[in-house]
Length: 121
Image 1 (cartoon, rainbow, N blue to C red):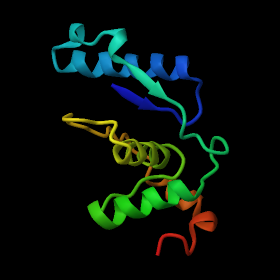
Image 2 (image 1 turned 60 degrees about the vertical axis):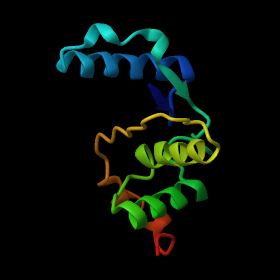
Image 3 (image 1 turned 45 degrees about the vertical axis):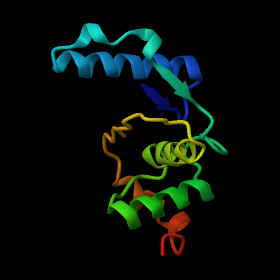
Image 4 (image 1 turned 90 degrees about the vertical axis):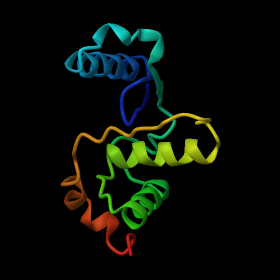
């Protein structure tokens, strides 16, 4: 499991992702199958800082909206999608099934209207 961090340091992000993965697997009846070693965090896509969006986030938002009809917030999921797209383009995922777990936040688009205005057309 890969968690793409948007604020927390790598060790904290990995602990958060592992906890959520165990909780999710437990709901499915397989909590014991998730080990700590299976959890990795990549915190290289934070950009200039928490809550600050950059051109890479805007590009990711546009790509997801245009190709998949998906709307993501620019703070959390937008940065995760930016990282996922970049890692995929670099060939990180070879013969793997990739699932993006999106837990909400599209309403965050409205909080960044000024920064995004004209950028998503």
